[in-house]
Length: 331
Image (tube, rainbow, N blue to C red; front, side):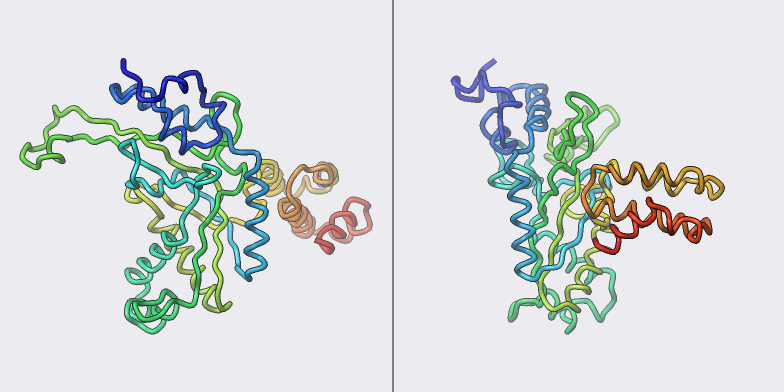
């Protein structure tokens, strides 16, 4: 089987690479078999997230804050494919960060999605060429009031892998199945039940993304409102008719597994069990390994549960309750 990669690269394994995009473009072992292409995409998903990316992401957050941008976290519901039709050595592509190889959503894609949703679903006052539409999104004569920044992948926020090392994974192998290839290619052969489907391999993305908008506060809020609806109802990227590309806004820290587990435990705690069990939950919260935002969500949930159970008067002078309140007041 002829190799599609240079001979001196044959010994390189996906685990040694640092950029899935380079792996896809430069390390394909063979163009001749469907299995080789499938395995090539599987291997690309095993390329670890670069260690330096977390530092780069933190700098990006600082730059956005200095620029006066407002941010939201958007969590992918299932899978997302942005840039499927981009130029590639393979049949499919995906938009990856040029330096770090992690998926991201271009600001132009988010702006186009929001503008499309406004035209389709928000009535004549938001359809082009209305004044509100022009001021928010711009037209051929002027730029809009709001800048849609690229939405970067939050480090370590991918879905947990089901096999291998179990680490969070931003990319997953995926397929598009063409059920009637002759019909789609020529248009002359009618589709039939006996046609042989063709599987086209691709990568799809998971995880949480930092969405950022800058501009006048009122227009930012309007843009986030439109974007929230558009991401939930239309989706961004390719295969949206199949449910891909849906994102939902989440509170900072809400998607951390340790935080999710404690929030679920507190929410499901029967009122009659609050007195004996909440002190133990508070003790575990005290040593919870989570971001400050995640710890705040759990702390607020504990306080709310105590109030719901009518145990504020009995709890307010306890050490554990004072510790939680002090954290919330200082956060």
